[in-house]
Image (cartoon, rainbow, N blue to C red; front, side, top):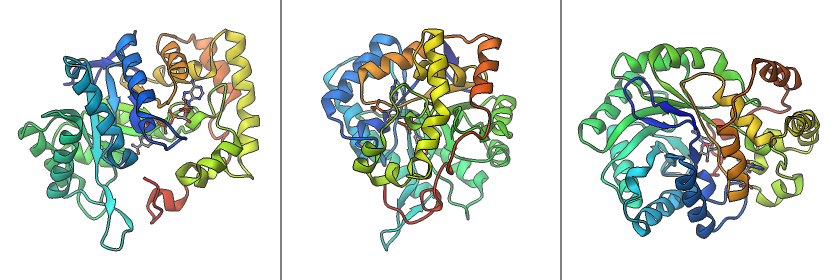
Length: 333
Ligand SMILES: NC(=O)c1ccc[n+]([C@@H]2O[C@H](COP(=O)([O-])OP(=O)(O)OC[C@H]3O[C@@H](n4cnc5c(N)ncnc54)[C@H](OP(=O)(O)O)[C@@H]3O)[C@@H](O)[C@H]2O)c1
């Protein structure tokens, strides 16, 4: 089992974490019982890192984790728990980002209440508030460490230059970014800058939101789910079939190697650097077992080269996000 240090000062955590956005109905309906089964599977497999956020299921993700910890005394210390804040609504109900100390601290306090813990292990600014200098925001996060409300700090979806600026104020333990064979943009500086500064790169959506698995979401399911996934440019009628066709050879190669496609996708992410952590999400313990398979898989240079041939940079059809999903008023989380 690969364990990795969370940045240069952090604790050892499992290189495979679990993305608890799937404790909400984001990718389809789920039950809290399914979520408890996943948390039990994390403990059994030795997956220690849990990734949540105040907005996942409007707090449901954090509440499920909190209830599990309460029902299973002694388990809090077996997990390294990360959460996030900053995505909120303005007075007109539009999506916006707030990075003031007051907002971050009051949201973190609410998260601690839902999780039933005095302190989280890692607290991220989920999205930057563009008009606030990132050095100032890093200072806010440093204050929350001093107050004992979080042990580590991080940012999500920031540029390498922003990370450098934040690091002049205090050490940044982790940067979270979408990173997989479907999204290679972190290789344009973020992977390298994280390595240089001793910051962990936490790769979200590492199985490409299901495209890099043996059973991608069907187009009909995406239509039924609607919401964020239904509006995502890669799941539209004019892109979805091309994305399935492009990933079919990856599935075939995984089968040839005797592993699941999800395992191959996770192993590929973890091969991108000793500072990279992968946080896939799933509602299913059977799917979770495939993700664990990938955690234990070390790819050879030949396998990595073959994967690169099958899915070269830029293979995916459709943008990663719509403009609205990135900054706009859409109401999905
Ligand atoms: N910082 C940010 O802005 C941000 C944004 C997005 C996500 N995240 C974090 O990253 C985590 C993971 O990202 P994600 O959930 O968007 O993407 P992901 O892990 O790449 O994909 C999740 C999707 O893949 C499916 N899946 C997973 N394993 C599978 C398997 N073995 N076989 C078949 N299907 C499989 C899941 O369906 P099933 O449930 O049916 O298995 C779900 O539809 C989130 O939970 C969240 O913690 C952070």
